[in-house]
Image 1 (cartoon, helix red, strand yellow):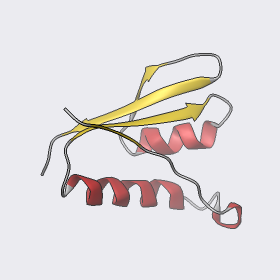
Image 2 (cartoon, rainbow, N blue to C red; image 1 turned 90 degrees about the vertical axis):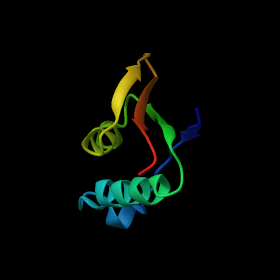
Image 3 (cartoon, rainbow, N blue to C red; image 1 turned 45 degrees about the horizontal axis):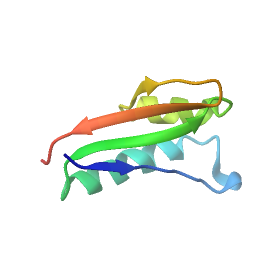
Image 4 (cartoon, rainbow, N blue to C red; image 1 turned 120 degrees about the vertical axis):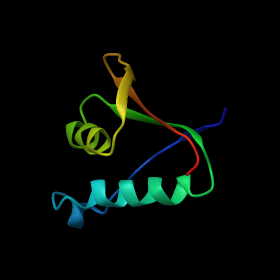
Length: 78
């Protein structure tokens, strides 16, 4: 079973336009064309927009702490 860590950083000029979720979903679709397994994202608890983005893309929180929440998306190869 494979695990890959996902990270997303959008240029501040383009934030707040809904692009992050679209880019993340497209990246996940592309990744899953070849790979299967679990995707993990570590998100600072203060980064609410990022948590919202990953949740919209299908990730769920699997571990929480005062500073970092860990989100997961499990999927099999298409």
